[in-house]
Length: 157
Image 1 (tube, one colour):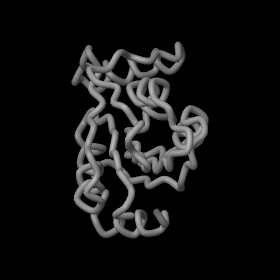
Image 2 (cartoon, rainbow, N blue to C red):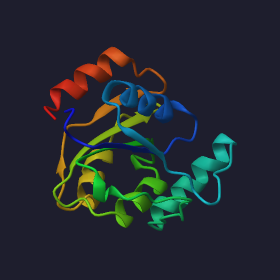
Image 3 (cartoon, one colour):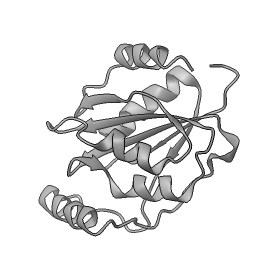
Image 4 (spheres, one colour):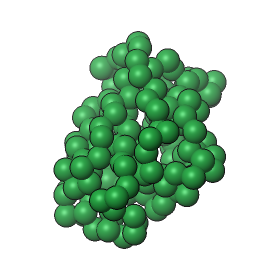
């Protein structure tokens, strides 16, 4: 894996996905890219849940401060909370704005009880031309570095 250039792109609302991304960085030495919407999401849980539902229904892709550039990377870890059974809308924006042809994509997600649902299938559908590996899923902030290390090793990067 040391000869591959790695990007860890993630969106995190509550901090759980960010914590997982930072653990991946510590194990891989990859570059971190936080996907920040131009307009922040509300902090109130019910308000953000309602907004996320509307965004899913309308296939919204919010503008990001920085959509990144995957061109120089071989491996892209993509992290997201699970919102309404799929990835958060900022991750859709990132996937739509970048070229994944010939890349290895390793998705990871955090959830509040519903599991990954269709998150990984949806990421695969948007990361056209990528080899999408098996994802890593953790409940809320339960991601631990040992489990993440085992997952990364299983990817055979």
